Structures are given as C-alpha cells and as structure tokens.
Amino acid sequence: MTEAAEKQYSEERSIDESDARALPGGARAFRIDWGRLARGRHILGLNVGDVRPDTLVFASVGESIVEGDTTAGKFIGDADLTVQMVTTPRVGRLDVQVLVDFDVPVRCQVDYLIVPRF
Image (cartoon, rainbow, N blue to C red; front, side, top):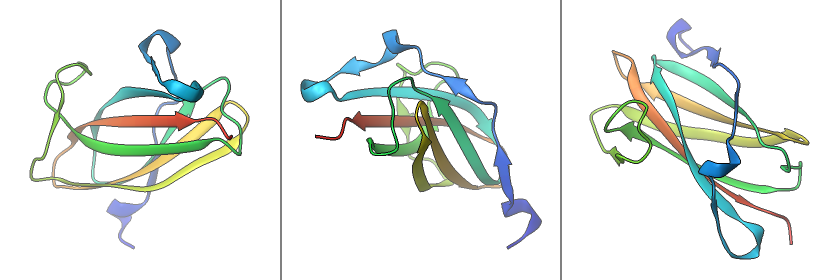
C-alpha cells in the first residue's frame, strides 16, 4: 500500500436528528457532507445516539454537486470513490471507511440508512 492510501481519520461528527428522515419500522436515512477528502482511505466517524453493535447500517458515497449543501444532490464524476467498510463498534458510534482515488481533493457526501435490529 502506498503512503497516499494510508488511513486518515476525519473530524468526528454527530448527527443532527432533525436532518434524518424517519422511515417505517424505526429506520431512518440521512446525508452528511464531509467536505473535500484527499486521496487515500478515510475513517468517517459519526456519533448516533441509538446505534448499537447489532444495528444494520448501509452507506454510499458520491461527489457532492455543491459543497456543504446536502439538498443539491450528488453526481458521478471522474473520481473513484468506494465505501470499503461500515462498522458499529460500540453504542452510539458508527464508522465508514471511504477510499478516494483521485489526484485532487473531492467533495464527498455519504448517504446513511440505519435499520434497527428486528
């Protein structure tokens, strides 16, 4: 693995529950703008109060049309962006590992779907 692909830990964030869309069965979905991410692996840590190790979490990453605006949407650009792992290591915490493979920093947003264990 090259030095450029080493893990980078992003600034930790907390979700504003007012931004989450409630879905049937207690599931919810939301989008977080992570700003510009440089080439390499990034651990995007998120504090979510009721997430437990057995909670089901799904994530997708894309390039944001407008940095900082989660309502403007995402697009498929030239950058290769990959969600490599999604984990819930402890109560109240979820981590998503994203790989950015592009020469310049890319505006990234991650969509999350959280489904309580049933």
